[in-house]
Image (cartoon, rainbow, N blue to C red; front, side, top):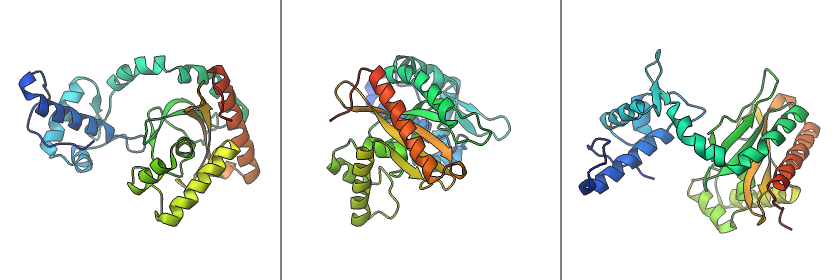
Length: 271
C-alpha cells in the first residue's frame, strides 16, 4: 500500500471523486499503521516521514481520526497514539475469532505452567499479529501486546507461519524485504529455508535473542480441520531466565499447548 499525496478532505461522500476519496482512505490507513507497540507515540513530522506525505496532509488526517477517537493526543508531549476507538472497531472481530476464544484457557494454563507470558498469533500474509496475551506473573517479563505485528524472519512466530508457505513465496518475501532477514544473500536464504524445515519437523521454532538480545521466543503452530496453520502459540521470555535446557522445556510446553488448541478447534496436524 503506497500513500498518495492529496489535498482532499477526509469526506469521501462525493461519488464523483471516488479516486481522490480512495487515496485519502489509503493515506489514513497508512497513518494508522505507522504506530507500533515499540513506538506507540508519534508526532506529525515523524508520521509524515514514515508514510511519505506532507505534514499538512498528515495533520488533516489525524484531526479527523481524532474526532472519531481512532487516535488521541498525549497531553504532555502533544504527540499522537492510537485511540480507544480502535478497540471498539476491532472488538467484534476479536469476539468472533474462534481461535482466540478457544485458545484463551489454554494460554492461561501455559502461563501458569511455565511462569512466562503466552500469546496467540495470527498471520496476515506478511506479518505475525498478536490477538491474545496472558502476561507472566514475574515482575521482569516480555510481552506481546495485542495488535503487535512482527515481520522479522527470525521471529519465532514468523518462522512458524513461513514454514507453511510455498518455498518460492518465502524467497520472494525475503528478497523483497517484506520479511526482513539480516545479512540477506543467497546463502543466508537457503540456510533460513533449512531452518524452517527443521523447526517444522521439531514442532516448534526458536528465536534465541536474535531479534532482541534480551528476549527469547518459542512458537508452535495451531492447525484447523484441513491441516492448515491458522495460528501460532508464542512464549516470549527474558533471555537471562532461559538456559538451553529451559529452552527445550519451553518449546515442548508451547508445542503441547498448540496441540491442545488444535484439538479444541477440531483441527489436525498434517501427516
